[in-house]
Image 1: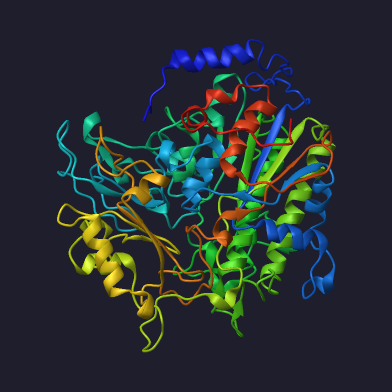
Image 2: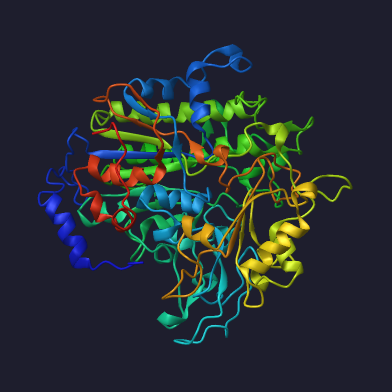
Length: 590
């Protein structure tokens, strides 16, 4: 793989298509002047409604019997469809995890070029962090010896690298509300080939992003997400390609949010007091997650109004900005057992009728997007803004009755996982093993990614999986096993450079629909896998100059990044992943 492109090459690509970039600077705004694309686009607002399927948009825009009295329940998204291109067969990254899903949206690349497989994964070319992470990836100060062969390590790019993941600001210094200042460098994996330097999220990813391209061309950029670790969107460089990065930690302990409200409901105190103790996070409550998401919604509204995300200072209206919503994802998979009676999210049937718990989450997101649209109109920015609404990942299964987790109850069908079978045979690195009582464990949700140690071969472990979980007594719920040539069809070959990719798993298992390798009693859906429900997501691009269009041919979320650059009059080829993988722009837009 060609992972490095010289700064000269990137500069030439930018100058070729942008010698007059961002020439119309507003008085006193400095960085952030705007170039106008072919449709007068000066700004792009990118929204990821994590978990939301194309089917969810169909149902909420047109109505479905069994929800909201059969009436439509997302009027703002429906209005955007009237001036939008709606893609019915948009597919996320594979695996369909938040980390590769996010990077696909902003880089135009898959794990082949970007190197992001999962929040928690493995890299044969790196060494463990110096300090143990918040989620238990063991630190080993002496494990990394500069410029010597690596030992290999699990990689963690989620809340575990925060200074203090129990705090909303991730433990950032006093007066700082999070972002890259929340990252503890001692909890980052280290690169022996670079003198054991810690690998920051923006340099863990191998290719550049829309934020870097726009930033280099003089534009102002902003992004809000759920972890400081997702500052990977700023890569590569020094973490400043996103001028305003905001990341309230979603896995922190829920706290009152003075001044924040959801409709007429105050978030101080939080509306759901059954889920606010130290053993809970924002993801454990249908109500509290809306308060959490509103923090990011308010950030977008501030940015539209020409201020920083917290409203504390003036700033240019971003050229590219956006956020992710968590509310729909939580509505799809949470079983809230602290409530009496217990409240269950998800869907009522295979056609995606939302439960009474999921419906308000979709309505909340729709109302929030409506606020953004209203603010764009109020500030005279609506006509010059391309709104992109999609998702990092879907959620599986839509038919909630098909959900099967790992159970210890006799006669239940799923009792183990592929990683557990491999670990019992001594075939996994200890940091990846489910037998490690303090580690972060294997990379398994409704997919299983398996990296092997030197004691076992992929062929021998696949034989074990097929023997111990055969089709007639499929205790691991195995649907399909990818290894050898099957892996290289999807990703680069596993191994160490120059012959292999140190991040590619040796084996990947996709289970039967509904099977998730979790024993949690608090969820009834998950993502990460390759199933239709995991990967088919909402994709809607809207601007007042567009005619309503429905596209039925398959597209990929990685096509969003080059399309955004083209909309702004920049060269999509400035993205390394676009060049490496030949990623096309989305059809029917320009």
